[in-house]
Length: 357
Image (tube, rainbow, N blue to C red; front, side, top):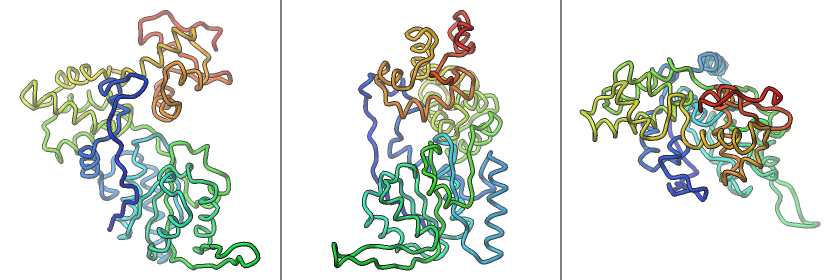
């Protein structure tokens, strides 16, 4: 499998305008170049190494085997779900299993039709085009992609005015894998052109323990069963976060202890990082406290939360909120978000006013 990455821009770690420092945003911080290299090294290369999402994996195996038996190109695939659950990893595994080249890019990175033409014309038969955050493609680019997905052709116009004419250019059959954290923003015409849809959900602690054990072997870290479970419980049901916390605990164990990770050391290290036993970090707790204290438990809209916290609403809605909803800390109502009884209990406060619900 060959890998081509069309989006080589790295985002530097820096203090957010809202005033959150790196420790406060341990679960939301951008990966450094070293972290990105480590993430790639920890990424499973085949289905047998992938932990969790069992139904999705089984369905993908069936689809791949059927396509190979018929000697056909795999249908276009759409992955959705919160960040860090394995959408990109699955795209690379599919390419590896098919022994195909994968070209990876993202919706915002494709700014002009010429960019997309260059990518599409360089794809070979059966190759994989992976577009992350596909819902952020511009309307012009999206419409340009429709005939490429349907009939493996692209139409481009040369000249202007009365001399304008359309030229069709045939492409080699390929598979588009689209991924997004916000499936609801995908347009209906684009959605209709995908043949398979898979939604990735948060992982159970047992699966995250297996992922942590696998990563610790690759990174040559000693972690016992209880230590791995402690990290897993605080990983927000997300493999990417589990691997990130494992590296932070490793740093603490090497500097403060003997390098071995136990339950006690994991607890000390993660508490120091501001990650509590529910997996909440400081920004999670600030959001909950704003809802409880500033807005009297809610309801409050995402715009108001964003303005109060001076934080981007996409971070709140795409990264923070899904986990808080999953563990029952907040609820969505037609009027906005409200804090649930579990959130009040987390801060040892009296339960939510019943009239909120």
